[in-house]
Image (cartoon, rainbow, N blue to C red):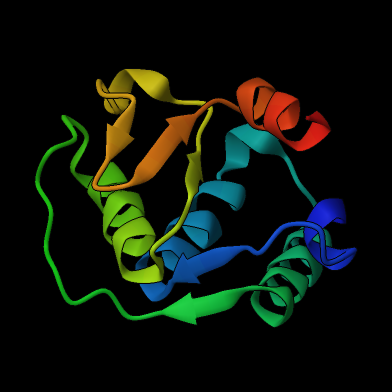
Length: 110
């Protein structure tokens, strides 16, 4: 988020991704304070570009992760950054490189 707010990285999301973030961040196992999560999600939506994917993708073994591929495709994103590489068993999808946060950090430092 810091890089997004500094204008160094463009964050792109879709409504299904925002919905998933909302659901995940409010899970009791994380014990995040409700007002902190709401503030974060509001900031995320203000800082991000929201796209409406028009193509449905079913490549990921985790159906919900297909929404990230759809978003990346709609945004013509250079990178899809994920800590969950096992659900993306390929290194690239239609011009979008799929990288871990550490790999993305290395790209930014080049």
